[in-house]
Image (cartoon, rainbow, N blue to C red; front, side, top):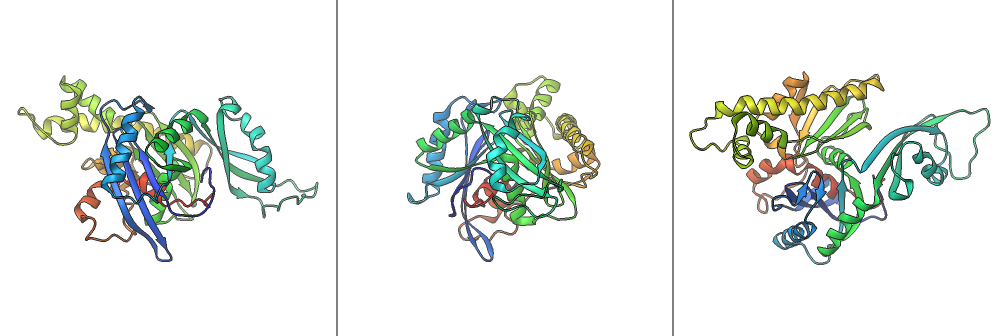
Length: 365
């Protein structure tokens, strides 16, 4: 959806707070086939609050994944994604015009909605709905016509794109497309589930420090938000309530119990942490409903935190909605001789964004 150029398969590189994931897909008339998937943890404090503190460590991790997955040296084109406070996504309404005319005027339009200096951001757009056919280049509408169209406006600070680009270049890759986490999330969901043209769903990716929300209404992105809260909230809740260190709290969150601590001692604190995350997700749904007649009917979870046992049930109970975990491999051809089915099942929630990135083609919009 963002910064597109030409058409060929490439690597999807998802740089998260705790790990780097790599995916490579082969596309045919029958769908996608998984060629490679790798994941490697990052050293502690490599990425803090969404800021890359140790770019060299990220570069080394990518190099190690490329080597471990035996990615051919000829495969260098890659797509990456960004999220957070440096990203602005707005759905705006403008007069009906051709894509070329909109491209020429989008900078001026963007200045009204973006709280950054327009010279400091990269801007792109996607037409999502129009009142009638979109005019061709140079085609003028009759003065009596007062038709409009909805446009998804996207702006990302150039410094964020430049930082990730440098990391990938230093790893020997050619960054060709920059995407957004919320759009990669949508693509990762779509390749295995499709998009219902008559429903409203929420795709929620719960990372360590950021939760990405993409509300899709009738098959089209209707509202997005990057929430500055994630699985670390659960760890912090356990740490505070049990008066223990962060590392021990993280182990307890993951179900690793030591020193006589029992599962039932930790569960109430896990529930409290999940409730805090769900509260912010619920607020996001309320923001969406203020500007739409639709209501979210189902929630689909992904991200490292979604790998926690029973979190879909907990989130569903807090929100009062049906909730499940996304499996981006569901409709992807996978050679069981190359990939351990148990491993694929285990890492599925963490693989959604990387798979969404790998499904991109350079001629996508």
